[in-house]
Length: 374
Image (cartoon, rainbow, N blue to C red; front, side, top):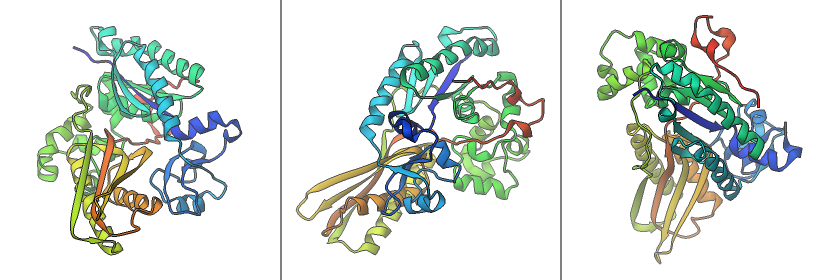
């Protein structure tokens, strides 16, 4: 059966909600996170702030230095979750099979609604639904979304990133190989920092170079090689995950003696972050929520967490967020019996692609991409 998959991604979700709720913030560099004069991190940034290089998990002090006129706002997670429920309700009205991957992203399988004999016919028939969905979100929620439309999850996700914000991109099945060729290998599901470095040493930096590689990829990336080759060719048979079997990944350490020694705690967090990052890579996942868990000598246990707009997967970022949570919530006021680090709100890796169409040859499928105004 031919598949028709939409990927919807809200544009700068946290910051956009703040700009909608506070009209005086529209058009200004909004940074959702801790103030720049306090220890903390960025949870999200508006597109006006992103032009200064601001991104999720960046220390707030760094963001303040890069964007001195940035407007810092404390995150209101309850507000964002409430808005997410409204948006997901609009998606449910389409009758599609839905996989919600985070508070602001979801895949929609509408294959049953558009059972065309030719896959590209089915994709084109689904365009009015995508347009209508974007328009309804804008009219009812005063927010913009970007949608990618393709034959599988990999391509739909990349398509939704391509023309942000407020984009609508269709990737024809016949052109999927050309669509992928100019992109960096990091956009492919399962390719993290370590894998990208291994491929780069072999002279593979773009998906096109991966498509053309004549050797056995298993010699470079092990058993992931055949799957990686399929992804490079735009082939992805992953179904929508309706069970979310892996909901969280965590690591805990119980100390032989209660301790509040900072170097010991930092070393513990660093090891736990590396362990978690390795499992995320193995399962081709990233996380939007990082949490720490502490237990004191009297067995009192506390858990604190932070949720970002853009997912993280590298050990360094997870470690930094763990340190932030311990410091921000003043959790090390007495010796710890146990220290734990974990991630949840898991989903496929997200990459923001900035590929100007002017740099693409006329024969590439990006000329078929459609930008729909709000």
